[in-house]
Length: 60
Image (cartoon, rainbow, N blue to C red):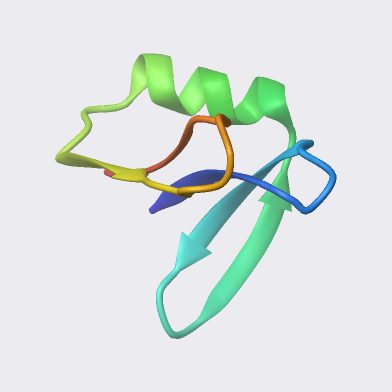
């Protein structure tokens, strides 16, 4: 799973997550490359009521 989430200051952070095993921070470039070249099984938007920042997780 890969995730793009905003931190408290509004800056985006990108992670590669192996649920229950690890959570590794990755670059924006790596996140975009994986998003554009992988077969995506599911996308889950993360809704933050007080923030206009778009956040998501996707599963490959």
